[in-house]
Length: 198
Image (cartoon, rainbow, N blue to C red):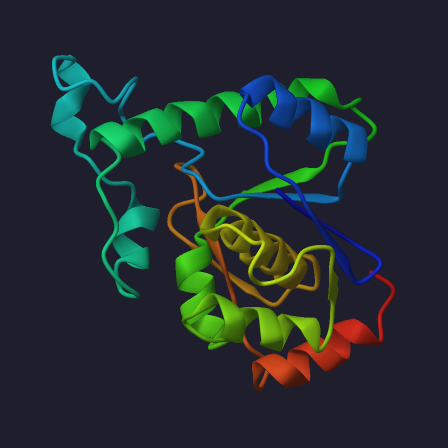
């Protein structure tokens, strides 16, 4: 988990689903960017191959569109199926954790695609170096796990969403994936964000 507050990333790792939900509820963020599928393909009630709904396929429209940037696994693949069920559960639980007067926007993101679009590097140290020009991070590059790095890029995608610099892939009725849209280049965008109280 990466929490972006006042130009600083606070990076944490949780394993239990309830711990994740509890931490997000405690922070009460404006945007919650989750690196996991948050919906099922249209017409599917589950992702089980034995179910009649399996004829509806393995991909959502958003999954098909994001494949333009690189390969993605079908939601029915064992690891993806578990991730999808967990993502959908967390999203639904979070909706009930906040009052009707304050409902954070929950978006699905794909950090690997965001990383490509932003062109901030392919290795951990390069990405860290590019980010550290604009943000403080409470861990060093060597301390970051790959999952923690993904969470930072997910939060960065949430920042682009917050300022309307994003593209929504897929059908909103089925579930979309948010990717950033560069204004000019990453450094120019970051200078814009840097001058705004985030």
